[in-house]
Length: 148
Image 1 (cartoon, helix red, strand yellow):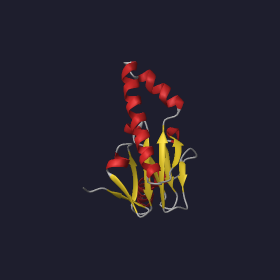
Image 2 (image 1 turned 90 degrees about the vertical axis):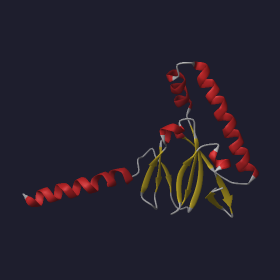
Image 3 (image 1 turned 135 degrees about the vertical axis):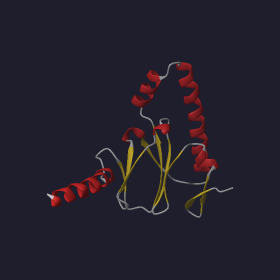
Image 4 (image 1 turned 30 degrees about the vertical axis):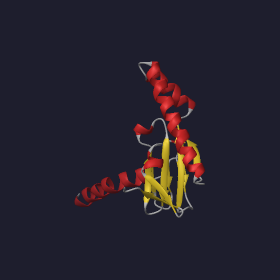
């Protein structure tokens, strides 16, 4: 009986970590790279859903217009600095970092999109369109948080 109780306790401790670190078939998988920048944005279905959930349609369009402008500025910044990135649809919801055996999901407050900055052992962060220009610097091929 004691053995069964200990086994159950061990399974309760190990199982959640195992489940949440495992890749899902819909995850965007990152493997074989030491760093990566990924832009993610909502699908047309997600945008339609956000429109329906917004009480005042004008409010949705004001926010969407602002986000598109910030996205444009972020992409201009990246292009001007010759920084390459992948673009995916955020309907994937999660990223799976194979080498680190980690699964990270896009935060809910990023429903209009943003960026995912990954550098093995250093950064695995979700960054909005404004932050990529103002709170991060790309120095000698690596992302650094701006501490100024």
